[in-house]
Image (cartoon, rainbow, N blue to C red):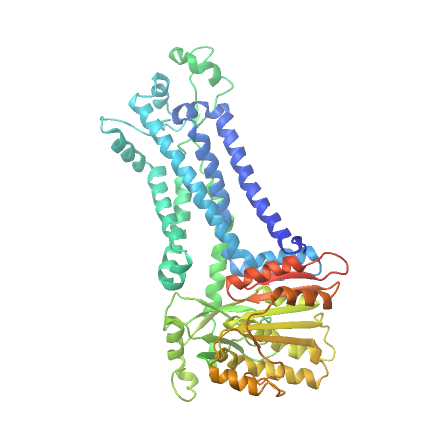
Length: 572
């Protein structure tokens, strides 16, 4: 059995800490409003749902404070780069930064949960306030409804002038108030943002997702305004007027024992929670705009087989690390659609490049705009203007921090490893290189034979260079073809089985047919690398990611002579 703590420990610790922070914030706020004498009369007016509403509001502030930070990509990249990986704990902490979007989603779920609790509680609160203003909650509630705060506002903001039907009157009175209509807008915005963030909407109707998600500006404006009225007032003279004693003597107010209770409006506190993340996000957007305005030149467009195009570009002052990614914008196609692409060039090259597989409307339009559907090379002057945001760090850049690297790409998910393999080939052949990486296992799983074509040139070049330098054992690669071969191809493969090179790829190592047996693979790697740290890097579908993640947990060992597998998945 493996040691799950290697991959799961830090993640679960951070999640538990965050959930405990929410629970603690909720409980402390609930106890304050449920037991404090300052809110005794407000509890009498609003009922037992008041502490629930206020505790939920505290957690909404807490999670709204965090929702923006995980999507500040430049800030994440900065902390990722400043977090050294020379020991187990820092390496694991750095790996958690790659799960920023996952944490963003967790926070979003919590916001939805606490919003439901807050809204339902306030429905009861408004009902109780309405009943008190209507005289249906008892004489004390009616007396309290007429009390004013220090600035002259009514303790009960709801006024009942005519006897309308109870339900309609309640809705009317609630929505007229600032907390009522801002809360309604908040709820509507949250529903739109949350429902349009599903994977189906994001992939099929990106503009819908983009526009609705940018309603977060309205969300934060409303949440700042929501508590500005200070409806939940507190009693300021508890020492002179003990509510636990005086509430039964309300008919004799004021008296020597019970002077009139004095109240002050609650103060808006959301801005204290939200100021820092909003400032961070504003600077993040300004920095993105600054980089997007910088000149980018497409220097070359290469048409590869299997409907893949390569864009080679230049940008002054651009610096990158192997495995990083950028966001690409082509204004002639859309001024709002930024698409992530892994850089396939190496830092040692004098240009930056991406490989784009044509699998959708946007990529098809990109191919047409760069002349990928025409014969011959297009003049640079005719190529469209583009903007890039990045580069940003991902999990794969950490491969150089491990003694053993295991790279797994599925289909087009092989692109992050193009840059890495190029950089490895340069570093390993440099005489004074201090490369920590001693062994690389590369696995590529493809559905059909056409998917091999553009990447095999790189593998062939790397294979040749390693053989010439006497380092052939450094790279061990395995290519798996899961389907897509015809009867004729199968016969040709069989006839060429004894050849030195593979019948499909032309590489020295032969293509495997079917799917890898991952348990056997990890078991063998662990046996061959005792006492070493092995970084597993994957880019591809979730189903395979789950299999690899479980294998890492199952075969990892914290023993001195055991191989420790650290799982890393590409996230954009």
